[in-house]
Amino acid sequence: MVSADALVARLAADRARVDARLESLFTERAAPSPRLEAAMRHALLVGGKRLRPVLVYTAGRALGAVEDDLDAPAMALELIHAYSLVHDDLPAMDDDDLRRGQPTVHRAYDEATAILAGDALQALAFEVLAASEHPRVGALIAGLARAAGRDGMVAGQALDLAAVGGHPQVAALAAMHGHKTGALIRVAVRLGGLVAVDETDPRLAALDAYADAIGLAFQIHDDVLDVTGDTATLGKTSGADAARAKPTYPSLLGLEGARRRALDLVETGVAALAPLGEDAAPLADLARYMIERDH
Figure 1 (cartoon, rainbow, N blue to C red):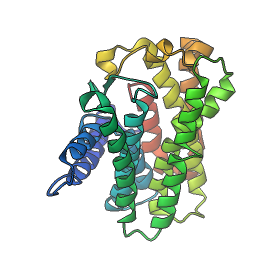
Figure 2 (cartoon, rainbow, N blue to C red):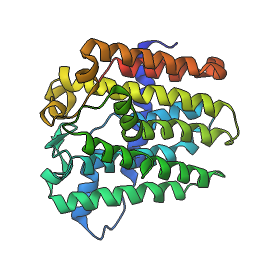
Figure 3 (cartoon, rainbow, N blue to C red):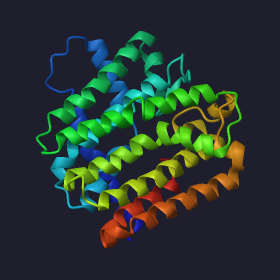
Figure 4 (cartoon, rainbow, N blue to C red):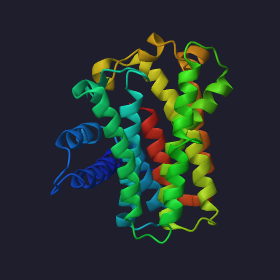
């Protein structure tokens, strides 16, 4: 276990690293559509805690990856995440006005530009990953595509929309979030590990189990924050889930029950890292830290 100050410094360094590389995607470039480019920048570079890239870096280092090799998957994950938020905020989806403390892309620009910006961010993610010279680049691309698409995040979003106004059981809610939020958390951890080791390495299974647990823990924590947080702190409209009659963990388990469930899941995830030995400490520290804060 590292000190809280050391952990915060490491997270800040990882965030600064991926931010610099994401920024470089927009420099020294003659953009065919400056408005599209500006909307993409607004979606990607205006704030964000970079949890998914941080997980790529932390998991990769735990298995001995070269840090430079982790940049492409870290960037790709954040590009996919940014695109998903742009589309999630659209009037046809969650109809949000605020994201990361700024107007959502369709509010800052217009709805059509927001749709196109999300499309372009998604395509750019695969462009960045495909440009990697890593020997397992095919597996990296396939893993990200599965996590982002019809068997992953997009399926979760469809299930989320279908659940509005309903009263699902806890297991059904967990299954939905396992796709919507958990898929990108799992693939972030897996891609970091896959940069370091071959797909047959048994330690990847430990990373998968860790990511399964913490992905759900982070979603439960997010549901709690939607109830207890304020708009200024969250950077998005607080209480939005309840206003849209969305099923959440606090609505099913109560606030304290949801908090306990999140903490239990973090410890389940940490326990799954046992095959990594002392190398797992940064991943354990990160999970425990993030569940105590607005991630």
